Structures are given as C-alpha cells and as structure tokens.
Length: 208
Image 1: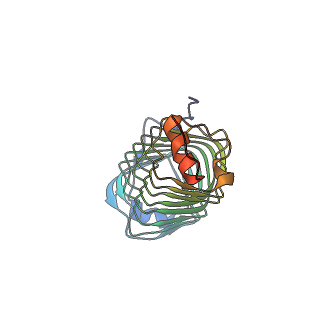
Image 2 (image 1 turned 60 degrees about the vertical axis):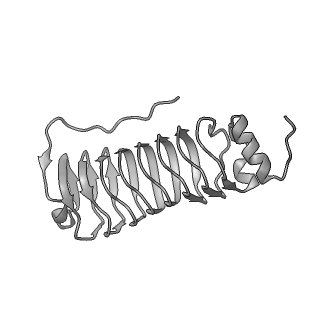
Image 3 (image 1 turned 90 degrees about the vertical axis):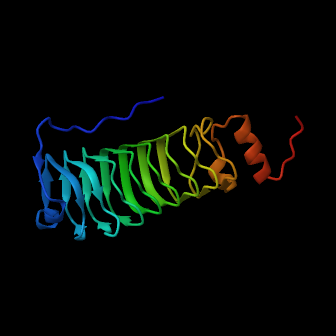
C-alpha cells in the first residue's frame, strides 16, 4: 500500500486560541488544544498547525487553506466545509459525522480511525487514504479520485455516484448493501464478497 506523505510540523509550536483565528489571514506553526470554536472562520490560511480536541461542530468553514496540518480527536460533525484546500494533512480519531465536504481539493491527506458516517462528500482527491474509518451510509457524489486508498473501512450502505472507482482497491473493506452506479464501479478491485455484492446490484445470480 502506497504511503501518504506526513504533515511537516515543527517541534515547537505556539499555543493559540482558535476563536482568535478570524483576526488573522495566515497562521503558522501553532497548536490549538481543548477548545470549542464559536466564531465562523473564513479566508484564513493555516500552515504547520495542530488541532487537538477542538470542537468545530456548529460552525461552518468557508474558503480556508490547511497545509501541513494535523487534526487529532477533533469534532467536525454536521458542519459544512466548502471551497477548501487540504494539502498534506492528517485526521486522526476524529468525528466527521454528517459533515458536508464540497468543492474542496484534498492532496496527500489521510483519515485514520475517523467516523465519517452519513458524510456528504463531493471533492477532488489526489493521494488520499481512508484507514479504519467508519464510512457507513456515506454519500460520495461527483468526486474525482486519483490514487485514493480505502484500507479496512466500513462502506456498508454507502452511496457512490458519478465517482469513478477504477483501480480503487475495495477488497478489504465492507461494501455490504453498497449503492453504486455501473459507471462508477467499473474497474474497481474487489474480493469475492464484493463481487457478490455488485452482482446483486446488477441482478446477476451467482452459482457457487
């Protein structure tokens, strides 16, 4: 499995208040810990920052660039993330339950042990890893995938439309009751259980 580049984070970071972020245009080499966002943040660039135990839920994020950032045990549930750049970022053990992520560009980004159940995603992906993620009932609509990896994810009852899965390996992920259009699933890499699931979608009866 191809590895995703890690964020470049300095050993020493400045401690800052997430609710003062809207006062700046560029924030470098900072750490935000154990806080709840109460102001809408827009048109801010974060570079080399760590967000640890930050509750974003309730505040949408618009037109923000995150480069070399780590989100550790953050709550981003039920928010709208729109028109963003995530470059060389890492999400660890974070909640994105019901989150809407649209019109974003994600490059060299990894999601590790995250909950994206019911998330709605329509983005451009380039070198993106989903590892041990709960993506049950996720909706992937009109995405552009390039070198996207799903490793041991739960994609049961997911909806995938107008999103080419060609050369995407789903063989060790759960795709039970997957809803997908024929053009999207063409060329995907599946195990036997996956083939059985897709055959049901196509109305094919397998004789074992």
